[in-house]
Amino acid sequence: MMNSKLGLNKRAKIKTKTIRVIIILIILVSVLCLLVNNSYNKRLNIKPDNAVISKKQFISTIAPYAEQTYRKHKIFASITLAQAMLESNTGNSKLTRKANNLFGIKAYKWTGKTIKMPTKEHYKGSEVVVMSTFRFYDNWDESIEDHTNFLKQNSTYEQHGVFKASNYTEQAEAIQAAGYATDPDYGKKLIALIKKYSLDKYDNVK
Image 1 (cartoon, helix red, strand yellow):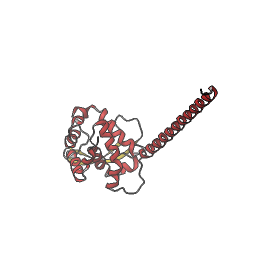
Image 2 (image 1 turned 135 degrees about the vertical axis):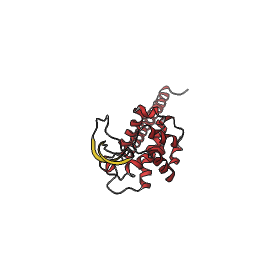
Image 3 (image 1 turned 60 degrees about the horizontal axis):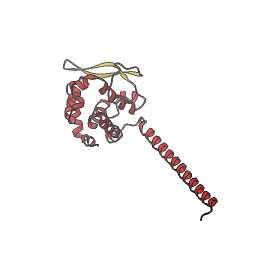
Image 4 (image 1 turned 90 degrees about the vertical axis):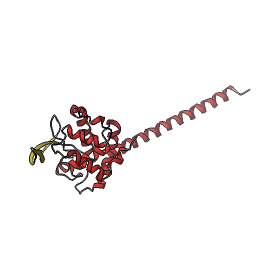
């Protein structure tokens, strides 16, 4: 028969080892979560320097966030990319450089920071330059997030079928019909950009 003291000591050692393993696992999980969070935060602070950004760099920078928007809100990644390219001159417009505004969203119903800039608008078949007040963002990810909120929170986009579109062509046409821009060829320009740079490949996300 095993000595009762030896049995107790053995069980105590096993218990101690188990506790140590659990503590080590908790520490490892905590460190892993910290590393993931730090990585995520670094990726989210998109704020390019003053150098001219190429179309390739621009697309590769925006694409992951465009894909995420498609998964969550059914705004095609190709549409987000095309709008960002068109509205910001691929990240090189004065509005984007000064205010990190990628989508040309004006400050209507906006309580955040703003900036006044000249912009081209189409009125009665003519293109004119007017001064408008735009939304100001601290970085590009704020602009991308607000673009999603802008489309989701303005009922006109839902009414015009933006979120029921089955492909990027339908969504581009719906966004134009909802009045996103005054340019009568806005939808066609988005579709042309998507085709030219094969942006629809970013729509194939699960």
